[in-house]
Length: 137
Image (cartoon, rainbow, N blue to C red; front, side, top):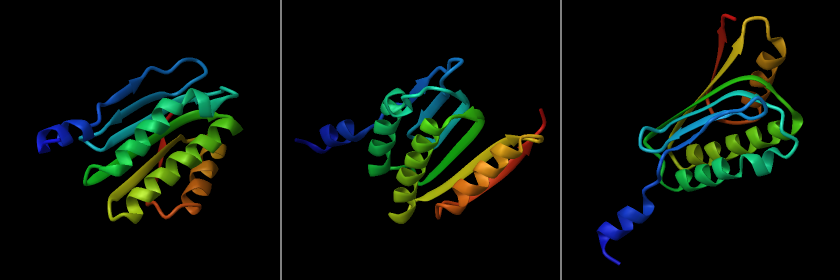
């Protein structure tokens, strides 16, 4: 296998998943190192629903961009989804441990104390730098 074939094999296409009333909108941009998870997630089988995104993230973590910026702008998520969020953070933490730069922005509405608390809790359970951002309704 030549070098060009190896580069071609290792390139990762961007992934866009349109959200629904039960699932998140997800944008994963490999070369730019930009990712966003936005909206509501009510699905009871979140691991299955977000399997494609988790697989993409695992492949991305093998050869990440120099800087990885991740936005979580969630309005509501259930327990099943919280386990997926934790898995996402664990994958991102592996990038950090390997010497990559990772920053998570956790946005929450001004009056949404539960979402603010969730961001604080996730930030305390990882070594990833978090920016908690209060946004207007």
